[in-house]
Length: 330
Image 1 (tube, rainbow, N blue to C red):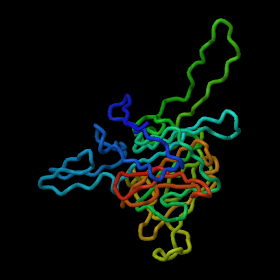
Image 2: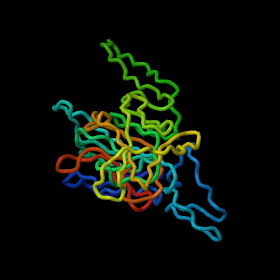
Image 3: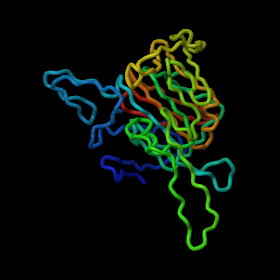
Image 4: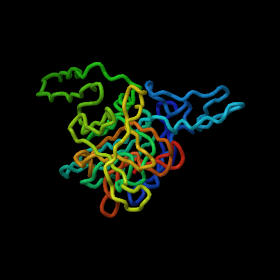
């Protein structure tokens, strides 16, 4: 099929398109709903400071400004914090152990579903670190800052993504509902599945790693899979040796009271999280990667990426393009 469908929520859409033969993501660009949504998108987090428009400015849905005496406002995608989440949901294979059927990939931006691909075949290569702000070769670096990186070995549901973004309050308790009693003769009933309420920072269930960037550090607050920062020794020399980078702490997405790490565009800095982080989210297993990012310059860059390129394997990640607000899921 090829078409455009609506859902029960006003302003929510899905594009139906055939999956190509190579099951590859490179040409599947995602243009966010700033051009099509009835409401102004993206929806900012309540804790994210927003730019103040000058008198005479008004924000259009195509992210430009109509002005009379005032200058044209900057795109809301540039030098502002946004929340990015990519999930892959798949059911276990009925006959093959530790294998999964083709599943669904979803891209969330600022807590809203902005891209959805059904029956996607994902088979990410094993043994790769998770690169934040660069591709697997340490190139295509991101100009900006990152904060609050979460990795799960399950696909979060939409409401859980909303909780991480901050537009939905967590449930008050994790207590399960009562199991109904069968009639007339009750057989032994299975225990209900418990889903823990989130703590101050993260969900406990299926969490692989969590990087709050406290004091500008790359420490994993969950399982101690600490990250490292790298940069080319000679930034403008091709194939320069990579050396440790000292990332600068910057204001977090919730203001100067928080902490985030800046990725310096002059030194091509990036973050490498160990392959222990991707071990349970490789192959065709379900997964979620979420983070806050501030993109200062839009170009062909990576928000995150891991795996290997064909023919050795496949990649999984999120890239940006030259147009603010335009992405591609790998």
